[in-house]
Image (cartoon, rainbow, N blue to C red):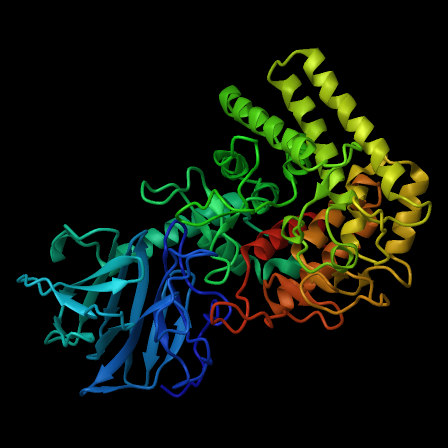
Length: 592
């Protein structure tokens, strides 16, 4: 093999490779490269979360659990990694071995070039690396983070040293090995009961191709080149109820490893973006209501084991998304029972903010800490502190009140109840203008001290999602500032802090381009009747996603994907399903 780079449908340094519903994935090393001899292929365990990284003493992080190496004549070979939408291929100058996640808990690998495959688990404190099951089949078990991984030789001979295992090919140079994940001690199928490698590939292909056809069969020409990668990234981050995890509905996780969780405020946005398949979209939308505490508060992030405690909270964007779905999609297929679940959940979730986040009882809600904002390093929270009364939070609440009223009428709630919610929404809109608009600009204030923000932060302009509910003068002046010399407009979309602001520092929301800012403000511009500006922002943003990757954060001055964040041993962020799904929606709607 003469090439020095693999054929990459996706680069494992940008997007670990998994499939819908699976907690198995493949990744390159944290310090790997896409060059022969600079790659190391790892099989990864995605049953981790923000507070459960299952780190090991000798691992850069617990995400990568099992090292996979090609072996010839007892020596490991320099290799590189190639990918298709369905397979990962570990290649060398002497041949290759292919891997496919054929089932949710099953990886099959196959080699036909006479090479062996060495399987080395991360060392585990006081536990053996490989355990011989002492069966005629030759099956072995290795620790796999919080689960176990069965190695079953299907073709070839599996041997183990206690530290690693190695499968050698048969007399025809062929090997086939099954990696099957178990939460408990395996009571497993026999070697002949596993699907063939080709059947595994066919299964993945049917699943992914069908998802593509339902969610995004095509995009306008400028964005079609990255359609499959965008849809694949969302598909491979999608989780479904499986009887073992705590997911009760389909959800979309954010980013492998660092943010290996489904963030609840992202699910309504995902529902909008994936709503070409309305059954999928509604399943995702309703998922957030599976976890409401006694006060009606939603959990922030859900891993495979739900964390329903703690202080996690994010802005209530559900009303914004539900109104969009009601205006733009056919609800005929949604059952009355399901709508009732959403209505009750929306009612409780909306009431929560007015009961528990309006501490000074002035009719507007406040954020109690910066983690609640969704804009964790935004300058205006830092400068005035908390409790922070902010126009973005209250705009979301006003739309949620309106959504409760509209959905209530749809499912037959009394007019008295629906009109009350509608009236409350209108009153809150009036308070938003009264309390957060100074005649020229939007601001936030500390509810205890009264101190006002002096930053140029885009989330302060979120009330524009209220559209014509706002006075026209407020709309006109807001948009004039947004696209003026001190505003947010760049060739790549809208930055989170004005580039001339004294608080512009790049970072997460201190002057970067991030998914929720682009999406929410595009919706806001549409609501204000400025579709030409919405298209301008959408096309600028889609272009950098297409050209630089589906990262959550992009540099506002260069448009490049920002992988500077380091957490849990990872040197940077991977591609995000938040970004890939947003690309699907914006490119389809605004692409030319």
